[in-house]
Image (cartoon, rainbow, N blue to C red; front, side):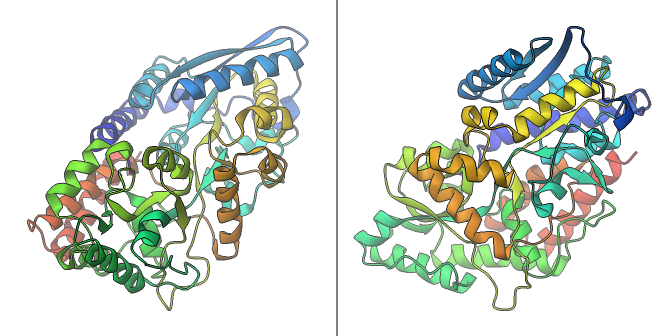
Length: 444
């Protein structure tokens, strides 16, 4: 969950990027030296540009990473280019349009296919003589691949969770649910018990339905997916309607807040959420948000597995990459780019600085190395993700070009369902129509 205003700024930028990229796709079609035979490090000074988004903490850590790398490779200079999330995609699309694509790009899953399809990103498979990926599980590495071509190296992994406030549950004599066996009905029953025990002063669970993480889990438990492998909408009206109907039933029963309160808190972002302010016992969040939520609430919050259907297929759970390392297809220095990406992805020196700032390391060997150095909360997150591994299946089909609009589309439809402006069935049909239109409009 992030504030609606911030999400919409980022999405608007991404949609703008699609238009710009469509005009520059021909200029980026040459894969710029991604064949192994050309990966020879230069003896001469080389400068690489490196762009990322983040806050002041991430900027400081990344500048330390750059300085450490430059000490080890004194002829390679890394030129930092960074901004916050809101301005990142506008800045990147402008650079691409100007023919000045950064050599190394911090990439988001929702934008990966758009940039890859327009020839902006390098085929990292051609960097394999330098850039190793053998310590990345296939289900994780696959999130950065499109049609068998690797365009992104996952940096960190997350999983969708139900965050539980153990303090609230204990204060009201309610047991922490067994997340290895609980169902969606168990989840709502427990949430209702909280609402009843507190006389409504604490709501059972924060609402969901404002981004695609929860929807992906719902669909995968029904043997479906959000997208087809060829870039269309795979979700059926029946599955989508059942998702919104479940939310509507939970809201009407009193397990979730009233719609007006939900929308007000959603707009405020994490710090003002029901979970962070101890106004709910449960809430849907990503696993990498445990620390921020605990810091905000001051309570004992733990991540639980998402409830499951009794007949959910094997492999319904999935790991979501926090972000990727990608490279420009037009870089003039592929060997140096591959060296920097390999160092970021596989070296203990980089891991000592990154820790879990960009998420729990996707590289299993690095994750094992770094775990003893993490704080108690992040160690618990690592354990949670490791324990989830037996349930994790193949990576979901990649978000196709135009799919960056999905959070706005989901958000709008959930609001209209909660306020009675659309039935779940009407929302399902409208959602598919709008999302498919966004995909069609972005098609090359």
